[in-house]
Length: 111
Image (cartoon, rainbow, N blue to C red; front, top):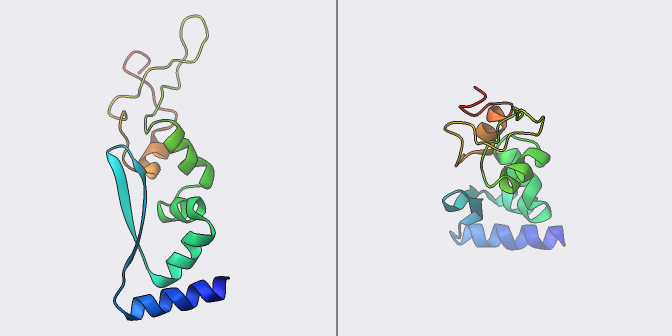
């Protein structure tokens, strides 16, 4: 199947067809342009490709989405429960790499 897909992608590219992938993003959808070779890799593993594209691990890429693009405070409440506050400036993180960098941050209360 991969050889057939590669042949089709190559033929389309020769006809000036361009390729893009989209994914959920804090502001709706993000578009990532794909080369012919990247189309094949994306088709085999979309999540893995996008994680690599953003230079984060697969787990971090998925966690960025699950978090609704927010970085949650790493502090604890007085009762010992994890704080659910959002780290200042990281409520709508548009890049998974920035989201990863923000991990371990603290809200203004726990600053």
